[in-house]
Image (cartoon, rainbow, N blue to C red; front, top):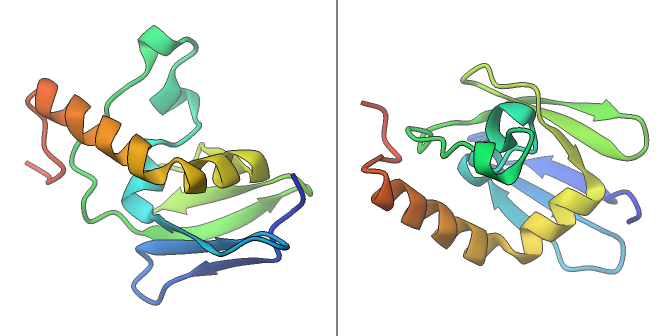
Length: 118
């Protein structure tokens, strides 16, 4: 996957717009990025270790750091900074956003968790 031609964080820091060459812009909410972070902290080292992260409705993007020519590290205002988002992962997330969001909401419900901090 080619590098995006633009990565734009909204003024309120709650939305990342990713534009790849010859593709429509993909809008990724900070909350979705945080709860689907590709970090081992969230994904674990195998599918059965994956964590459902609650309480991130208000999370925002604090900053982004380029990682070579293949990815960006997204640092969130809750201190999470270990996720390295490759261009492929951002593209995939943008195209599967609705499905992944619903899966996340279903997991929260099944585990009695909330999007809000408690």
